[in-house]
Image 1 (cartoon, one colour):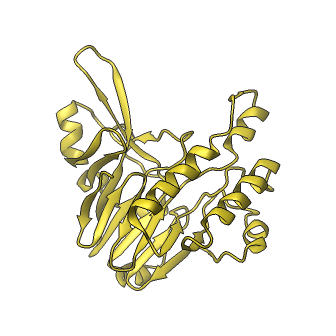
Image 2 (cartoon, one colour):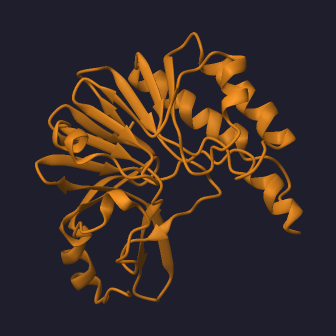
Image 3 (cartoon, helix red, strand yellow):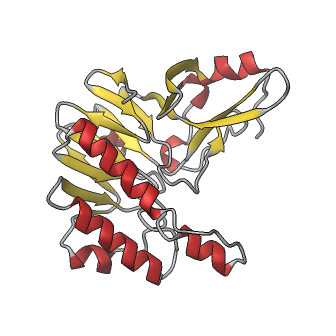
Length: 253
């Protein structure tokens, strides 16, 4: 497996981070049920993407052998009441994971009506954040008290779906999901890419205004851009601001 230590004891892995000290794997933004929402909008996909998500998670568990798995928000996709697909697939995922890891779910902005599903399997649900020792896990759609941030050595969040796009010499584009790693005050912050195959990501080279209240006032150009791809490998592209200058890109407000 391709991986890269980004903070002491914290490794970026495909779609997540692995924290050695507490044997914890964190992933975000599964968006289970997205296909059913697309179908209602008239967009048909031939089959569910959920098996791909499940296999990615099981692959990470096999390779890393974590004791704890934290899903950092947006397990499901529909904002409203859980769809039939969400009930079936989320329950299957919980059944698959329980017994392999200690499972925790942090609430995301898409996770309305998730509680009845989690209660079926007695999975802990944390709103709006989870603290394990000096590690803070928050989806990012809600603010976190400054005191909590200051007391956390490392913050792990999702919500932003970061990605970066490169062009070759003939103008072809290739987009990679990426991790962003920087600091809020004295705390390290890791922004996770979305694990969902249907969430290709928002290009951070062109978007300078983040969605998360956690990032208001934070200079994302000072964050490192890391691509940890299952096939392409692990690459540190340096600071976002330097990468944008190299690519000749100006931020769009």
